[in-house]
Image (tube, rainbow over all chains, first blue to last red; front, side, top):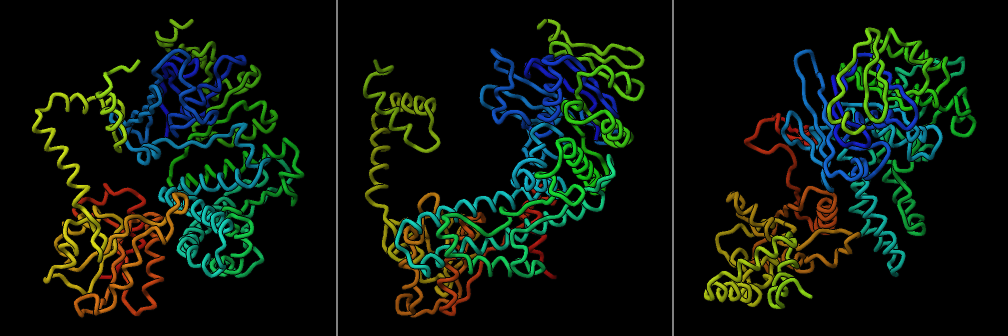
Length: 383
Length: 204
């Protein structure tokens, strides 16, 4: 898939239209000019969410009521679709080709993998970030998995409340088991679906992992079930059922659910050592890039097209040698969008990329032919 | 100071209590009432009062009714060996519209949801078990219970809970199927439904 152009009104400090190149797009400019805003606009157009804020309304230019992001996606040479995210007051409307569309259908139009400061939690933070990374991946292959996750979270929430209520009352263990069984029964089925989805996805990642893209050191990953060592993971349903039965008293004392894939993790080793505890900041970034590239590869082998790859503030995240490896690897693969404030990077890739200079929210192309992309009238006014 | 005279404000406030009615709708409704002929208003009031006065829960199946037992439970041409369990009276109506189900019903008036404080004791279940005794069912033995609770986690939990109660009695317990809506094209079905339909496929 290809994002041909994007047009933005009153989103952050942005205005105007930018036509992107098929390969590498370098968004270049001084700090505070709106480089990341362009990346955020692309991300928002794709996901209807921002990677910077939970409240998308905050992204509408201050004092304005209506914010619009519009873009054209080429799904094939002849199939083009116009996507639009409209933010007005507290409502968000999404449409395809000018017609309102349900989120589920919209989300499949433009897929992105985004390497941002937030995403570094995958290699630095707690297991939650890693589970989310895996779940995003599974969803990118099987959309129905969204419902599995939603149902699972719902059941956990209901069960946790039940456990708290039961602890406060003077119910016998048999009594608790009787009212908790209907929830555990669903937990078993949903846990198994999640376990299968994630382990299958990790296997796919492993198959395409460029383990030594940057260094001599070796990156390995492994899905770590919280039930590891507790029995036969091959018969996952039976194992979960057994553990739930065995641990009911413990769950009751804890007041929340102790058994299930919400306690699982993805182990990421760098030269055999846990990246989170022992990896340097540079090694952590390398590992995340390698994981993102694997996610992109898996996506490609499943859908036969590449998602967009967004990398925010590439210099802050990677050294020059790694950037070079990475961008060379991506050539001929994804449509890539990177932001940078370093002129030397622009110079190095000038011939092989489209470069956009951002200044005060406006973007103009300074490509090898030095042709100037129109900067919309709206933007000119704001200066 | 109030924006409207007291009686108008009171009426708007009452309308606002209703589900799905916001400020604007409440105002519109109140002004509509102001323009209504006196007789229409009387009829409306009467309908409201009557529904409260005359509608009761059927002592057998808990459905809403004005006669006890309700028309389903007292009917002589329904199949008394089958009971279909639903969450709400309007779910019963949805099944009844098919005209293909000729058995009896049992209305729970809710589904299990700990976060909303609804446990087994809050569902209308106590009078279900007594229905299985033939002497309470015109001498007919109940052979099958159909669980038609909603296809969400709460509905599933409820169905599961009830099946555990009933199965030991040797009664056949079934769950309504989930999958493709009939009469539509495959392409219009969302992935989740399609996924369920594939998982629940059967041999022909």
